[in-house]
Length: 301
Image (cartoon, rainbow, N blue to C red):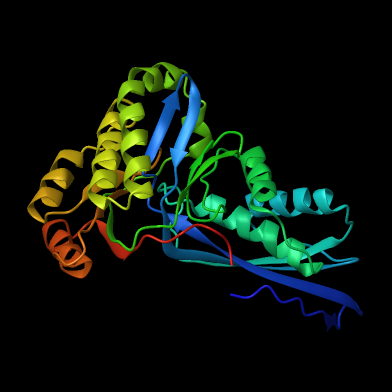
C-alpha cells in the first residue's frame, strides 16, 4: 500500500479532499514481555498480516466512521503537524482480529498517523508514531523497523536487534478477548511482573543473543521461557498442550500474546511446514481459529 497523496474534488462540499494511505503489520504477541527492575520490556514479533488505512480530510467536513482510537490518532497527528483540517473518513481494511493480542489497535493507530501525515505530503518517524500510540494506550512496537526491544508504556525503542528471521509461524486463538487498557490497570500487575522478572531477564538475553547471532533455536528457547513465565500473569489454559505439540513438530519454540489470547509456534526451516501444522491443529481443535504466516521486520509501508 503506497503513501501517495492524491487530492480530489468532493462534489457535495465543493472543496478539496486530501487522502493519505499507510499500512502497519500486526504481531503474534511478543517474543518477550515483562519488566526488568520495574521497567517495561517488550521484544517485538511483527507478522505478515496487515491493517491498511486510508484517511480523507478537508477544510470542512463531517467525520463518518466508528474507529475511536484511530480518530484520536488522527487528531493527535494533526496537532503534531500543526494542521487544522476536518476529518472526512477513516477507512480500514485489516486482517487482524481485535482484542486477541495481535497488535490490531496499534496497527490501526500507527497506520492512521502515517496516513494522516501523508495526506499533507509528509512522513513521520517511528518514534513520533510510537509516542502517539502509547499516549492512547499501551502499545506494541511494530512501527519500528526490524525486531526491537520496546517500552510499551512510553513508546521508547530501547535497542534494535536486527532484521526478522526468515521463519514461519503457526498462530492459534482458542477464544476469548482481552482489553489492553483494563489489563494494564490491574492492581496485581506490578507484583506479578516482579515475580517473573528472573525468567524475563533470561528470555531477553536468549532472544537478544539469538537474533544478533542468527541462532534461531536460542531465540525460540527465550520466547518459550517468556511464554511460560507469563502463566503467573495471564495463564493460557492450553499452553502445556501447545508446547507438547511444538515439541512433537520439532518447532524452535513457542510464544504468546502476553496480554492477549493467542499462542504462536515458531517453525524450524526445512522441517514440518506451517501449513501441515496448522491443518493438524485444526483437526485437533476445530473450534479454534488457526493461521499460518511469517515473521517479518517491523515498519510501516
